[in-house]
Amino acid sequence: MDVPKDQISTLLDHGLSTSAQVLGSFLVSSSSANAEANPHVKAENLVLLGDALLRDKEYRRAIHMYKQALQYHRSIPKQTSASSRSSLSTSNRSSSPNSFNVSAVNENEVKFKIASCHSSLNENKAALLELEGIPSKARTLQMNLLMGKLYRNSRNSRAAIACYRECLRNCFYVVEAIIALAELGVTPKNIISLIPQTPNRGNRGSYDHLDSMRWLQRYVEAQCCIASNDYKGGLELYAELLQQFPNNVHILLEMAKVEAIIGKNDEAIMNFEKARSVDPYILTYMDEYAMLLKMKSDYSKLGKLVHDLLNTDPTRPEVFVALSVMWERKDDKGALSHAEKSIQIDERHIPGYIMKGNLYLLMDRPEAAVIAFRGARELRPDLRSYQGLVRSYLACSKVKEALHTAREAMKAMPQSARALKLVGDVHASNPGGREKAKKFYESALRLEPGFLGAALALAELHVIEGRNGDAVALLERYLKDWADDSLHVKLAQVFSATNMLQDALAHYQAALRINSQNEAAKKGLDRLEKQMKGVDPDAPDEDEENDIEDVDADVEETELLA
Image (cartoon, rainbow, N blue to C red):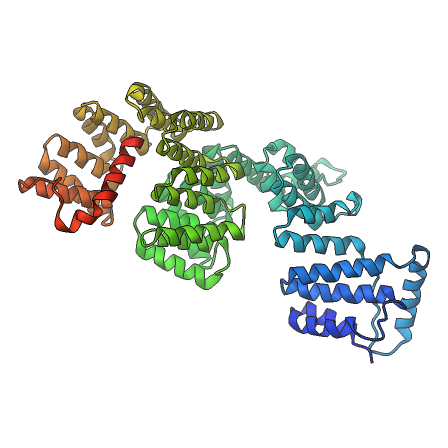
């Protein structure tokens, strides 16, 4: 008695892979599908069972079925395979209703399915071996896209670029290929040249075609700007696209991610929240949003975000980074475990490496932090990976390596005030380099006058060298435009050092009004209140005795990065 092959295809079409898998096991074990008498039928049945297993993400079993299918398919003599398929087709048309006219096994498609399984198991070499066995002219869009991804993971950039270019020749709207080519350093002009030219007799038709593609050209240019660390240019292009496509979730998220990288935290948070208001279940870049909420000490929103992400899809790497951010306050080891899990899910997930590096610095393991930030830089050498590496090298007392990394960032981002500040931070880490540090901080402020980070760093140098008045004058200029808790804390620290306690008190209180969770403001205010009462602020309370070691470690790290 025959098992209806067409019903397995129907079940798969309806997404009922478990039922298809069970029925498939009957199909391949059917006595009518004798392997010796009908190897082509056996091969086709095994492919169907493999498809059901692939849908159920049972990749090893699917590979096993597909490879068996190829063995049976290849055992068919070439000179008789065509006639056997023809006779199979003819007999199926006149046979019982349980028979089904199935096309012959497509060897290239089966190889692609095997490659897809290997890729899902992170077995890149095995996946590439299968795909490379498919003739280049026979490769489909999906095949080229997967090959590009695999070559990129294997650091074969030239081969990856060739595959992605082939994708765009086939269909220019493959956004994954556009983004990958931009990140691999291909120029916008070269990418846009792949736009197919419509064969129009009149010039007007050609013009209309190009005009209709203008938004896509702008998108390509924006991606290339971001990939080359031209964040300002990228944001301008995204803003232009957003006017044309208001409330576009993808553009809002891309803008927010870039703003988070360059430290425009308020703007980034606003755009993340806009994106979530349009699509509350979005997961893309939500770990970046979680990091910003942690920086703002907005733990209420952070908790709600993590709750929403877990309810949407608890298997995504973004969710584990967000969990890591939330756990950082309670259990740094637990937080580290979540960050590592995000990388296990997706080995190219950059926020996982950034979070891992930050946690290692927090745990006073700078050598491990170096490895994590290097991993992020290898995937994409953006500002945060450079910043993390510099901090890690300084924490390891490797000033030479820190300076080399900071200069590398400056070369990669010649118009970035933050890259200039990074070089200044390295020079500021030793007394002999403070004058150089001052020049870099001042250059950063000339390039970007509103860069608060450089202003705070320069103020710290003024304080170290006894120029408290200069520090106050510099910081008070920023108070007009910035309602920032860190600015008030720095002013409070300067006033406290010059024994202007009432002014210091006012600024600590202002900082806590802006951010009630600011730990530096809390500790500074507690210390100040003791001073005002005539109590030695350095004398430990009974409750603080157990925390002395941690406080010393914090002070030591601050001195190292000053």
